[in-house]
Image (cartoon, rainbow, N blue to C red; front, side, top):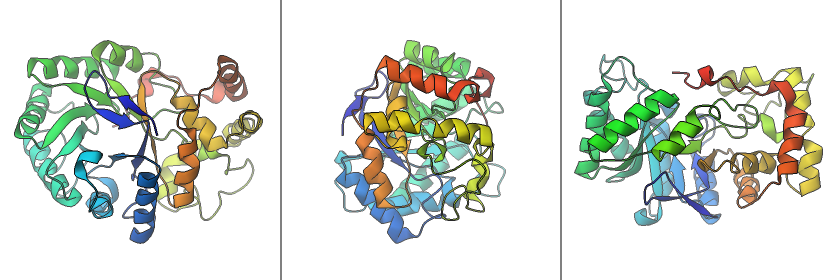
Length: 327
């Protein structure tokens, strides 16, 4: 497993990171979650991403238990703050009270004294950016957070956050956007701005929530044991399950076959061709999925292959920069 530097920082992360957005604490039992985490560790993945809101805070606890006993210095643990974690008026957003309290709660659930990366899960237009960045800076100086990042921020928000971070003597080093062959909205504005500001992308949903694995077929209902067939988890991916998109995705299979790759491996390798991407986050409900995905690490795709992919997908690709932020 290769590593990449995150932004202009000294932090190295594995180019495939393991995330537990829709799995731990909800979609799979805890023993299965632990098995997937250990499969990731065995494959050389040391970067793990979660958030306080996942599974109503349960996902952080599951990950903390799964990583118990591992050498802490050998791991890079990332979590996030913004979405509601309680019923109180201050149990949400990026105000100082919630940022500090949420960090403390995340540390308890993750069973660690610090997180390597603490991320603003969305931009909060109701709170002065100075307040949020000052709270982040205080967490960095206290040793509870090593680096700070954001998720799904627009280009101008990233630039403003990076400038404030510099003024406060800390670094804003990452953004976590959705990015895949089908969802390329960051390419026009977010990526160029991030490159100028020394910010890397840690991308989520590189498989378009499983659609790019090819297991969803046009004209057919999603498999009952798949994310698309899950009553709650499948709700977030309905926009991908159209016959037009699924037909185009099936057209990627000959490309993957020619390269000796699975469709999932092709999709992961594709996002890693972007020089501003430091890592692609993978999730799993079974260890075998981890084993398959890690084979994408280090794969280089030629310009001819990238052109073939663009031709196959055509106009089903979403590129509108206005869809960058969905908070």
